[in-house]
Length: 127
Image 1 (cartoon, rainbow, N blue to C red):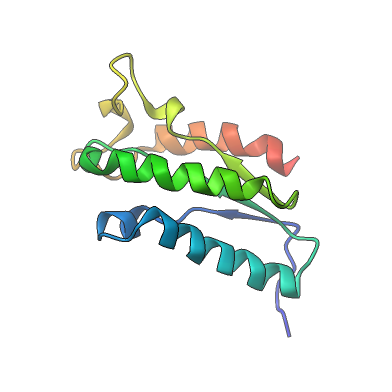
Image 2: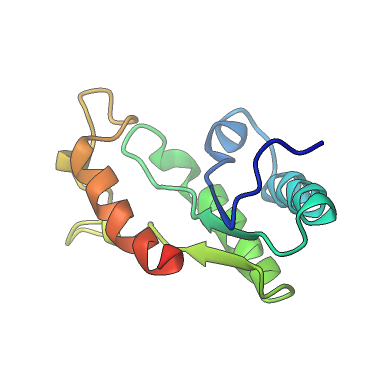
């Protein structure tokens, strides 16, 4: 029995996996597995993937982050119940690197300013 039956699931995952060496293809496989399980039980539920963020601390893996985001965006095109929100661009400054003011001192975890920005990006998918 399914306890909750959401109309939309907002999903963020893969960042730590990439940092630990997981490939973008495995991140996609894990996500598609999740989508299949949800849609088997809740075929009308929409799933919105928030793109994997860039960060100051893990800038060395930004290529993997962007590759993972690209394959997930591509997957979105296979199912109209799946959406994608790009957070890469909105987190970058003029130098095309993550804005320091969006992160706490560790350069990894985000400030409330980011969550407010993400809310603005996600809201249209929930209305």
